[in-house]
Length: 517
Image 1 (tube, rainbow, N blue to C red):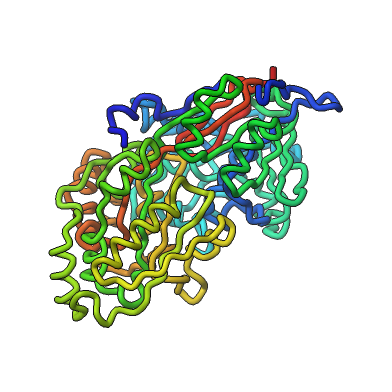
Image 2 (cartoon, rainbow, N blue to C red; image 1 turned 60 degrees about the vertical axis):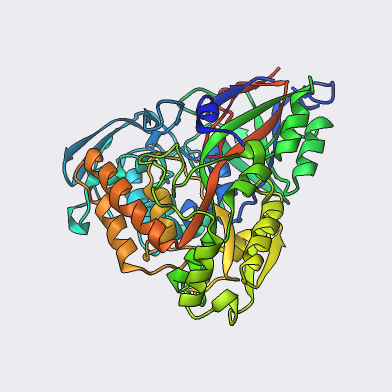
């Protein structure tokens, strides 16, 4: 286990320089500089960025799409925004935010970028019918002031425009032509970033350098984004020269690679917490007493000891990399006596009468999920919960965790993290626990909704911080729609032939300035 002091250094974007298997891999036989990235997450095959909230596809999309701003989230600068497709931005009034756009940018299909694309993107992305609308603070009207100026208006929808400040680093900007024909949008990604989509070959997606990239053509000619769900396979491929980057290593793999002179390793705190999500819209977890009883049955110290360097002990619903982070006073602790009291009060003394409960977790996506899943299962069983652990490979797990169209989801509990590309806490809070989304938990609690709406609608950051720490988080800790287990770290291994890769604390790897040497 590590402390926050140990980890806050190096938590932001870290450059890695680094040869694998004793043989450099800089150039293919055809002369191309091709980087092969072994990813833990699959892509869905639907290239509309608003169609999903999956991490693997989101990481892939960062190669292709730009947002208006960029959030590097470096140590000590977690709330800093940098220009991307917008060169400047400012609040005009409470319900209006203005963005001045970068000139001379082209989409991969050669269309010029401009204000009409921002308007189409933001109004489409914030439509509640779109799955990724849960990333947006609400619907928004976009005014085209001129070719390179837009204003976002929120007054009609009852929340301040400042809610878009950090979200401006999240929403991938689409071409107005693509938004007009969603079938085209689904078939191929068309962005403005350093790499453009070429083809999908089985579990591999091929990207080529964008000659027209406004930041300068990448030195790397090609990126192959390969879905490799097994962590051991990712490491073996790194060592034998098949892959240049292996992401989401297990802690033991990271430790063993540190002594290998042929690779470079990287460890970093992320924007992600790991949660035990309860299905709050089905018995027995529709009763907050049963949820609290489950939380009091879990000894998080044992989980942290098992996780080692992969976990940072926190007691909050957001990561230390997020605006508003603070450990919550009175966060549920390990207390078997209180668990038994709550079970008896809810009508299930010693767990008698509870149904069999399915607990869904993954293997190969996050470190040690199977191992600590088994530990949590045993702890819950000890207090009378009849729990069955279901372990799935990542693609099946990503299907299982989300609620279906009928509002229900598989099982009763899910192990899920939530990594988002911005300091904005609502990117975690609203998709997971506001009744308008509640993508996994299915929670529909007016008190939680009110607490989340109040912090979102705060008139300024200072008041918002106060509401988050004094009202929103304590309310959630009392109702526990989910139980935050710890804040997560990630481990990567890379070939020493790869220089200039930047690992962002929310998952993507920036290769726009990377090179193979």
